[in-house]
Each structure stands twice: as structure tokens, then as C-alpha cells.
Image (cartoon, rainbow, N blue to C red):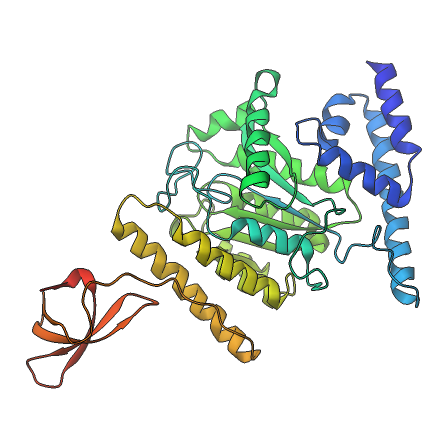
Length: 408
């Protein structure tokens, strides 16, 4: 309705500075599909009115940034109700990034964790990126702050936005039961690109994510952005285009490896070089992602330790289909904890405890190896589940083996 469009446009255009920034956040943290992106790019259909709103947002964003610079230069204390340490938006994929698809097509391909299983440490990683490097809150999200998390989904709008409502119910559950620090907003896909996925063409899905990302960025000109996705479908293709369009405003790109790098859609020798030049971080666990984020200055060292400690706690509660899957993921997580601890050692800070591996054979036990004959257990390494075995023959020879290669 044109009058409705005019009323909405007038409200936005008559709101200024920090008040406008708060209004945008209220629209995006309402917990349903009626968000700022939908309002400006779907509900308001008059292009001239869209243009006026976007120009107003851009102008007021410049005023906000100028005001923040003046506050920082002055000797006045920061007004806590207004100033945030970082004006940063975190845009994340959902399937195989927030939680595992369990390999259910077309959602994703990751079978390392069960269907809809949250990856250990992912929610804390989002929170720490939102907090930035300021340690004044000791990792606790202030109640009066509005969060900056948005999800880019390949799933399309469907009848009466049923799909999006289901997603918002999930976000609400995560906030109330799993510690998600804020109510996120959701940028949905479209039917055409979803259909193309069934034909193995991920480019339309990637381009829809790029379109949504760029439109969302135009609503928040005062913000920088971090993108988090996976290498199973079109996220890396999307990330390349996003960086090309918004290079100065992209602080980091983090890609969850759910398959070999060489199987990533869009993979070529030149593309790998381009990913490196653009600072793309390919990670196996959110401990590894946090370590790289800390090195980039996106999160604090306290934040790094927080993600690592929470990831260890959450991993212990994960139910795997079999012990082999669990052990493979345990080794993967502990390898990144080892790298994290190497970094913490350099900073002379307390280390993070490994996830302990279960073991069957006590020190001194006599065992039979599959390849080398009989021997005696000398040590067991909890971080990677390896046994140090002193072989009977030749005398004095030591080997390192996993438990599955030993028997009584």
C-alpha cells in the first residue's frame, strides 16, 4: 500500500544518528521474519522511496562514525548506552556452519556430526566476534546491548514464510537453552536458486546470498562485516563476490571445511591463491577459527580461551553414531587445542585442557599389536589417543599406535 510505504519511509527518515541505529537493531532483533531487510527491499516496492531511505541511512551512518571518532578523541567517558567497542555485523551460513546437516541433501554434506548437531564452540565464537577485543565485560554479553548476528540461508521464502518462522523458533530455542547471545535476523534464499541446487549448480544460490549480503550492508553503512560459511556448496563462491564488492568493509572470511579443499565448488589453483590473498580462513573446528580470529585482532585472547574451553565442554556432550567417528573428531579438536596452547604459551597465559581420550590399556599392560607382535604399554597420550609401546622384538624398539591396532 503506497500510504503505508510513505508512513514507514517518513518514520525512518525522521530518525537520526544513534536513535536510527537503535531503530534498525530493534527491527532486526524482533524474532520474526519482519526485519529491516524485508521492510526496505520487499515491503517497500517504490524504487524512489527505497533510494531515499538508503540515502538517509548512508548519511546518518557517516554522522554516527564521525560522532564516535570525536568521542574517542575527547577525554569524556564513553556513554555506555551508546558506544559499542566494535560496529561489526556477523553474517553466517546455517547448514554445515551453525550445525551439521548430517549429510542430508540439499541442506549440506557434512556427516561428521549428527543431523542438526551444533558444532562445539560455534555460539561462543559468534558472541566473541560480536564483543570484539574489548575485555571490559569479561565475556558476558551486556543485557542492554543488541546483537549483530544475521544468518544467510539458501532456503527460500515459502507460503506465509513458514520456513523462516521455523528458523526463528530454532533461534529462540538456542537463545534460551544453549546460550546464543542474541536474537539473530535471517536473510532467506529463493525458489529458483534452490531448484538449481538439485541440478548441482550452486552459482544461483551463491549469487542470491551475495545479493542479500550487499543489500544488508547497504542498510548498515556504518558497520564492517565478518562472513562465516562452509566449503560444501556455494559459500566460497559467494565469499569471493562479497569481498570484491565490499572489500574495505570485510574484516574476515571463515570457511568451515566439511570436505577436502580440492572438492570446494569453484576450486582451481588460481582460486586457492586468490583465497590466500583475500585472507580466507579454512578451519576444521571453531577453536581453530577462533585462533585465527584472535591473530587477526577480531577477538581477544580471553575470547579465544573462552571458545576453546566451551568447545571442550560441548564436545563431551555430543553423541556420535560410533566410537570411530567420535575419536576422529576428538583428534581434530585436540590438534586445534594444541595450536591454541602453543599460542597461549607464547603469551604466557594459562592453557586449555584437551578432551581426554578414553583408553583400554593401562600402563605396563602386555598387548599384541597387529603389525609388530607383542609389546608393553609405556604411556597413553590423552590429547590424541596414541599408545607408546615398547616392542618385545627387536628389544628396545618403541612404536606409537592407536588403541584399535592393539588387543590383549
